[in-house]
Amino acid sequence: MIELEDVPELRDPVMIAAFEGWNDAGEAATAAIEHLAEVWNAEPVAAIDPEDYYDFQVNRPRVVLEDGQRRISWPTTRILLATSTSMDRDVILVQGIEPSTRWRSFTIELLEFAQQMGVGTFITVGALLADVPHTRPIPITVTSDHEDVIHRFDLEPSKYEGPTGIVGVLADAATQAGLPSLSVWAAVPHYAGGTPSPKATLGLVSRIEELLDTTLPHGDLSDQARAWEHGVDELAESDDEVAEYVQSLEQAQDTAELPEASGEAIAREFERYLRRRGDEPPAG
Image (cartoon, rainbow, N blue to C red; front, side, top):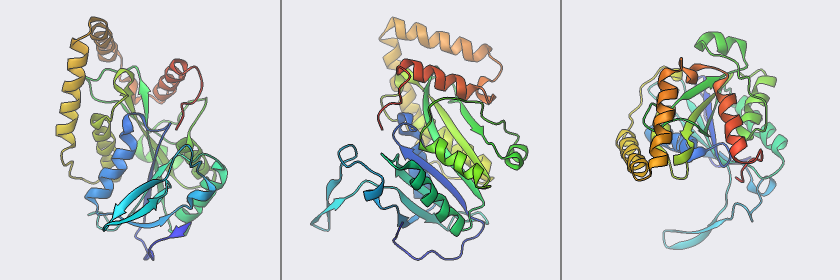
């Protein structure tokens, strides 16, 4: 861990983490963290040394200009601190890229930092491609394997079995360490998952608000979400097969009994997602 700033004593901190790559359909999860960092004026306090965890041929460093000077920006996972949250607690945001290697060491390092900071709740955020219509509210699923958390928020444990990403590994490690954790996932329409999905980001931010019992400014997320939906509407209208498929998804969701509220929903959506990808995790 590379310390960038001294961290003061924190007030009942919660850690919220999202990662680019396999866990981030429509870039919705990482965009949610970026939004939280912006509205809370979060400042970077630490970073994980990228040399140990990233393949730089997969996630290449970038040349950037700062004050007229060229420098190398290395891909890594940054840790930001928000102390102006209008809550009686501070928030640690983890903004990163799914590591290329040594996942167990990465997980241990991040959770040790959380324990040192006195984190009392760990929230992982993800997004997956799913058979859902873009015209309906984005399904947001919240699960936990911690009994107290399940009862407190009236959740269900996840019943998903299959390949997982770093978000799943971190959630499991937090449970094994006795750290109360929740996993928040957005289901992004798979036929519109090739571009950023602000509607899914807005859904994640709104659900995090509920979990933290706070209110956050949404900025232009609502306008972006409407523009995104309008753009996908135009795509569907230009193709009869896509329009018919969207209509079938709308009918299925309208007649189902809140499938997005079921702990089994995320398992079904993952299974469909993996079948479309040939049962192989996509490249990060």
